[in-house]
Length: 560
Image (tube, rainbow, N blue to C red; front, side, top):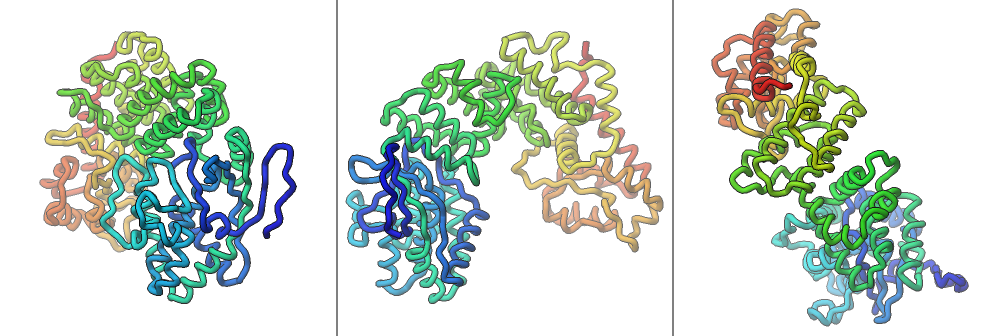
């Protein structure tokens, strides 16, 4: 286990070692500037813990792959690849430490987290692992400090990814607390002695980037934004101090949007720079974007503006002064849709026009109408994409958006087809939810419902009617049940708990639960209060009524 390969001309050294070898006395591992935040989810933590328990039960070694390090002048190491594994293993160790009652055993575990005699001495402490500037303060407080995993008063702030770490800690505590004391000690011995890895030490940053890239083309690849970040750092020729600063800013962007959100935004930016490009964002970003803009200008000026535009789009919380609430409504209606192609022109618009509230209100009201029409009438993604691309081009080229010929406007034939479609069935959950919640906002005393609200679609006539149900008396034909169950007229909106309670009950019992439980009553549900019957004729008539209301909201002004 201690043999080391001969040093190659590349300067790369690879050595098989145990986890205790790199989390041992005097070792300090730090995250480099370009490294992403901690992002493992519960399923990945569970897989690691399952592997560790299997190694414990079988007495075998568990190989966790390669950890790539760059040696620094202060004898510490920068972690190029291995952050997620090392961070999670430290969290497991910290949880085992805080569940251990014997002081000697506790000190043995703590020795793999920090030097036992210095770990609680503030700035003088020597910790085995140091995360990036955004994650590290929380990591120190919630994980590495003795007793920290038992605390419940450490709050993860909204503008970070720390909630992910906090959830994983709670998950680990729940599983490990159920183990016997003997099993936990055996698990620690397994982690200390039988978790093995290949420690790869590279002589410089360029070598680290290259090994990182090669390793991550195999197995689970990093997020697109991690690779793009590396590309930008390389293209810009930043100094280490500059790279550190820009990497901190990148981490702040990731905290605002989440890793998946940042991936999606970079894909949108890639489309705005070269809409006909094919391939994954990570593979073509440098070619499409960095070939047309200076990397420094991109990270200094363009990216922060794009991040803010995208944040508004996914959160539905713009800031346009007195018009803010009015603009929130169409934005939150857009967020209900089960397709996301509308995000490209929305981000392009907010990037170009971040301050004009009156025009923004008109744009997002018309974009919302267009996006719903795309869902209702344009059934293929390619047809929708062509129309959105045309709109995006107008925005980018500063062309008029509301004049004749604009993709935001509709012909009489398109209006007719949209209305026809609205009277039919909605086969998918996403379509039913979007249409019901959007219709609710169009009703008298209705309100905009967001994705964050406790609001679910309830089918008054159940989608699956029990054989002994009274529904068969008023709906004797199964074909009519199928035809009308998923139409707009059969929808109401209720909180999740009420949805479960109502389920397959008959009409009178459902009404009693809707209106006597004390739960929130939405406008679309209030419509049922004075109805005594729920027949096919009732549903057909209600569908026509609701469609007329929504069509009037969307198309009250004649199109050219």
